[in-house]
Length: 143
Ligand code: RB5
Image (tube, rainbow, N blue to C red; front, side, top):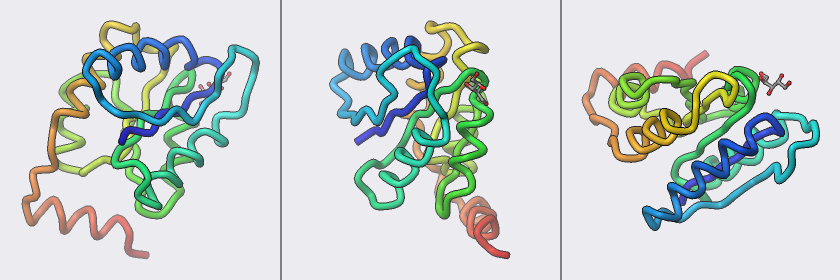
C-alpha cells in the first residue's frame, strides 16, 4: 500500500501520480489535501509518516511546492527516511542505499512526465540489503 499526501501546491501533480498508480493497479491511500486552497504541508507529511510507522502503508509519496518542507517534516519522525528526488538516478539510489520509505517531490520543480518516471523508479527499486547500507541506516537512528 502506497500512502500519498500533498499540500495545495501538490494537488495537481498528485492527481497525475494517482492516474499512474491506477493504471498500474498499485494500491494507494490518499491522505489529502483535496483542493487548491492554501493548506499546511506538515499535516500531510505527518499523516503519511504515521501510516508508514504503523505499517498501514509500505511506502509514501509526498508533494509540496519544493518538496523541502514536506520532507523535512517527515524526516523528524522516527523510522521515516524521506528522500527529496527530482531525478531518476537519485530515486533509484535512495531505495538501494538508504531504503528510503518516502519519496518527496516539489510540484514547482518537476513536470508531471518526469515526476511519474521518478515515482516508477522509486516504487520498482528494492533496498539492496547490503550490510554496509543496513549499518548506515541503523546509525541514522542513533543519538
Ligand atoms: C507553499 O507556498 C510552500 O511553502 C510549500 O508548498 C513548500 O514548498 C514548502 O516547503
